[in-house]
Image (cartoon, rainbow over all chains, first blue to last red; front, side, top):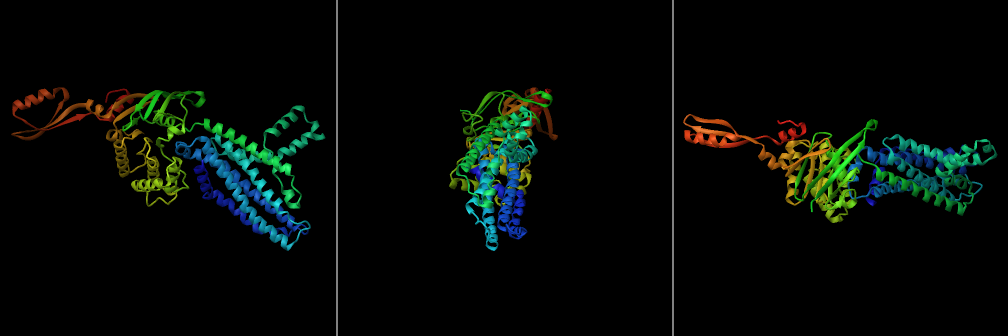
Length: 263
Length: 289
């Protein structure tokens, strides 16, 4: 499994898609200048822009690398040679996933360090009313990375059954959209306005809320921007949710991939 | 213990419009260690399906098979095998050396031995100069050579090669045949599929012919060639000089006797035989050639 992990990382670093997406990171040094557009909350805006840019880059990486990694292996017939080695399909799949996950974490950390430099420059020039809580900024970046690792797990699961490029890529984008909106939809259904909906629709919405991923818990941007203290229990539950959800997705993915025939 | 044991292997697909496609029908076969077995058949006969089933890439609908005594579909069975897929494709962002190291490590080879074997096979397959270049820049023949190199690196007991000569120039083809012969001498089992009859004729001990998913014949190549003698070409010498004469197989004894009476000297006697290709065509088309 470690060998698959290693060549997955090598593949990403040599991938043109990665090089292309990396170009977006050159926007980070521009954040202090753009943040000056805010007359009063320059540092807060710099944190917002930095975290949003990091999130956007991680989203692109998870969709285009996560969604195409396994699909490409099957489509280009790399699997014929690799799966004939004494590596079980489960280990191969886990190696692929762990490589992608490690890369996302690494990318988030590198981008996070650059963002911290950018924010500290801005905070030095325009001291904020509330001091920057670096722990919260760090937590926001790590939880953002966890969110996209979960998305990669969904992308890998979709790739195991896909015969074309569309399902893993567009399915991953759809998962992202649904996961970002599921909490709001749930809250709407529970609100007085939601009571006007038919009982069947409400039950469906409730059921989907528990089945589909919920990414809102991973969003700690407000805590990072305004220095709002993190809830210890909340973050622990989010980590637990992440671990269980990823484990379930990978379990489904390994079952499906083990049954797939490499014609 | 046989290197490859296949018992009643069948594979049925659901084709277009839910039609049933019998890709393999009750295939049974044994291949011994130290044997080169040619698996011959026209395109779409079921050669690659058989091979992919042996490697666990496809699940059989029924039947069983073992590689060096291990059930197919397990990592333990694949541990004994070097597999070259048809028209192979490897991670093209890696170079040949990196890919061979990946393969060797997957087989759990110790680093020292792996480095040594890697250098040996790269040189043998004439890839040494290109070893640091990404494989995406390789020609088809070079990729095929990487394919051969990656089956050799861990020195397995069983070599399963799907169209190993495909994409190779005459020098490459000769090299692969030479490697196969060497493997046989070292007691390894080589099972290779092809639709090129001359490849089988030149290196194989036995040949299996498959058509429409059914194994139609398994023969010793030597026996096929011996059985295929249809006549003899005689070179004669008498007072008038040298001449040649073709004699059907059944008339040889009589003709030799008559020539002796006439005082004609036989300077050369060469058998004329049906080729393996004729044998193959007879089975595939169902008519004598």
